[in-house]
Image (cartoon, rainbow, N blue to C red; front, side):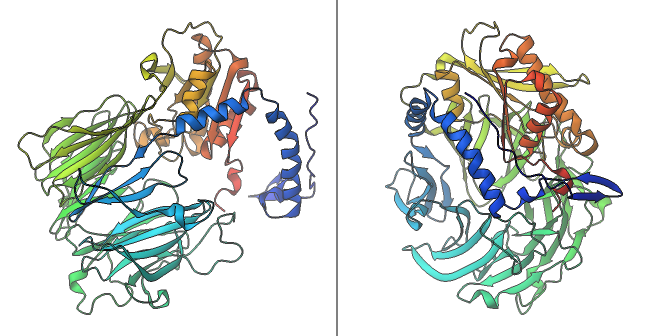
Length: 587
């Protein structure tokens, strides 16, 4: 096929000045997706690409097989709310998951909220949910066509009955009810210039925290927090488990660090009427603090303060000096404390990441004493439900070769033994014929990097197999095993091998691992990924001509850098929504 790639216009007079250094940027016009020039460029690219794809002999069959394998029932963990259980379910090929309700775990389920009915093309998605403390009201967010902008709606659970309240201009928001059920805290932005449909490329500034009283118009919402001197700050409010306090977590950027303020709602004789009298418990960006629960004024936080793999810390609001803080669960010597939550008033359910595999444990809330391991195979926790006032928990296990197993554990019983509540079966696919192995290969500086490799059992390592190598390595995000139909089709029907490299920059081994792959050390991420490719070739899994690398967003930056630094190492590169211009990332 004779390919002539389109030649985009180069604006040679476009030069940016960074601290006295001149950087040409001839393609800056492509940053505007709505300009006619960009639209024309995309159209020409499509005219080149689509005929090539249409000639693929197995394309139609792949599409059919993907549809077949994706058409299986999918379930979320049941969640106890009052006398009801709620859960998400997708019958197979529905665009959006549907929220169902049932009176008991073995009772008949009824459709409660179906976002598929909110648009003809199925692109309205349910993005956030918050039940009132008495479980009688529900606030939920709707997104149109993948946009980050959210519209918050309300309904009365009994019925259910739609309420007229509607909140707009919402983005990157919290959603937390006060325990009197009168209203919710949420975040919104001022009026924005230009489009606000999710296609805009400019950043949003001056996010504010509001309190909406149920039954009133949004114009009457009460401003509770703003940061006029820090326009990039984003906040999230969370009402404490006992309903007395509201905590405010403030962040700037993507680093795992936040300020922590709080307000005692019992000290507001007239209720919430304006900017809250916040107490600045932690007023710096030195570490991250995630609220777990509280017993009166004693708050438990998951934190990376002096603990890059995280620990649980107790802070007494009546003795707030750091010298008075008490460690409840210490940092593990190697594993990362990924999350923790309180259940049945006296237990902490704690999730650790151990060599990129989830483990689930039970601890005593009062003493921090380890009580029990909850059984898990090699894989990830894909879902969890269970609150402080619940006596039971549900958690969902998934892996590269496991679509989903939901476990149920009743913590009110003397013997705490999780049981399989629901297991997803895939027709026409024998998972026992395939295997997942984890290897640890050396990077350029000798650091051992974990990588998962999924393939059919009994393959010959003769360099003949196509390999799809995926990487991310950023924002403290861990790439844990998960089920993916497209991956399985590649492995089963194209004789392929899936490889996922857990490179530095992610959160696989805590904050130290994250810091080792960002800013001035970003090259470590690129070296780690190139090391993965070299390992796969050297061990006979593939050859460079059959090695495809893939990443999206930050992973797109990774693939873009690697294909430029080592074009000799890869046969194909697939970059999805790559963050390529780091000089303008802050904008």
